Each structure stands twice: as structure tokens, then as C-alpha cells.
Amino acid sequence: MTAFAFIYSLHVLAALVWVGGMFFAWMVLRPAAMKALEGPARLKLWVEVFQRFFVWVWVAVVILPISGVGLIQMRFTGFETAPRYVQIMMGLYLVMTALFIRIQTLQLPELRQAVLAEDWPAGAATLGRIRRLVGINLIVGLVLVAIASARPMF
Ligand code: HEM
Image 1 (cartoon, rainbow, N blue to C red):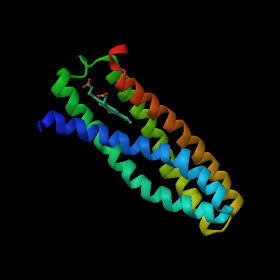
Image 2 (image 1 turned 135 degrees about the vertical axis):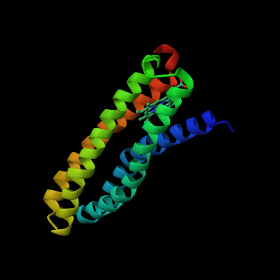
Image 3 (image 1 turned 90 degrees about the vertical axis):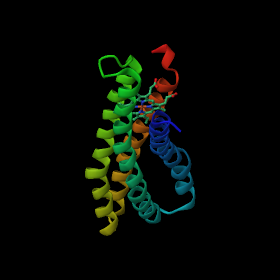
Image 4 (image 1 turned 60 degrees about the vertical axis):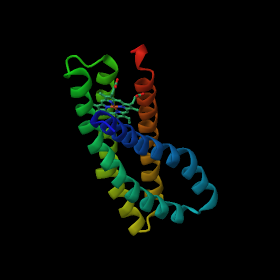
């Protein structure tokens, strides 16, 4: 395996873990939890899910730009000569990371606090806000992967 192939695989795997994880949470786990669990149990489940999933999101947040910049150097010699879809990728990465950091630093502690205090209405309101931001990030991530894959068009 060449260094380029290794870094490329790492890059795509990191994208897969982040975007695929959000897809699973939004499209599969969320409706299943709504159906199977009462409010308090559902909120407790999401605290546990986010805590575990966000460790992997941090790994992706670190790997994507490092491997991405490596790919730019190997394939396009520098930022100025990188094609438009790579510039879009970097911009959308910043959007996704900003939304993720917002959830991680503001909303997850709020959710954890509400669950500890057994304040279920406050927890449900916070979970609703997290759900909206994860939904936006999922759409941005899917668009990004579609753009990266349809690169001859950009
Ligand atoms: C600073 C952030 C990023 C940089 C610098 C970057 C850079 C790059 C570069 C240079 C390539 C290779 C392009 C080519 O060979 O033509 C690439 C491919 C790719 N990137 Fe990124 N990227 C970044 C973030 C992301 C993010 C956040 C995602 C998705 C969540 C992503 C998903 C992909 C995918 C799926 C490919 C493979 C496309 C294909 O071969 O069909 N990248 N990226």
C-alpha cells in the first residue's frame, strides 16, 4: 500500500465514521428509541450514546484535516492549486466542526445536567436542540460526501 493510498483510506474512513454515525443516530436509533422507551429512559440513553459517539467524532475531527492536507500536498502540490471541490470540503468541514463543538461544549453538558437533576422537560428541550443540530450536520456531511464523490462536476 502506498502512503497516498493509506492516507486516502484513513481520510475516507474518518468521514464514514462521522457521517455514518450521524445517519444511524438520526434515521435508526432516534425513531427506535421514541417507540421503545419512555422519556427519562430515552434521555439517559442519549447521554450515554453521545458520550461514546463523540469520542469517535473527535478522532474524525482530528484525522480529516491532517490527512486532507497531506492529500492536498501529495496530489495538488498546495492549497492554491487544489480544485474547487477540495476548497468546498474544507469550508464544510469548518461548518460541521463548529456545529459539533457547539453540541459538545454547550448542549451535551446541559443534557447531562438535566438528566442528573431529573428535570425531564428541560432534558427533552435540550435533546430537541441537539437533534436539530445533528440533523443539520448530517445533511451537510451527506452533501459534502456527494460533492467529493461527484468531483468532476466541481
Ligand atoms: C480540512 C478538511 C479536509 C480537507 C483538507 C480534505 C481534503 C481532501 C482531499 C485533498 C481529497 C482527495 C481529492 C482527490 O483525490 O481528488 C479528499 C477526498 C475525500 N474527502 Fe476530504 N477533506 C477534508 C474534510 C473532509 C470531510 C469533513 C469529509 C466528510 C465528512 C471528507 C470526505 C472526503 C471523501 C469521501 C473523499 C473521497 C472522495 C472520492 O474519492 O470519491 N473530507 N479530501
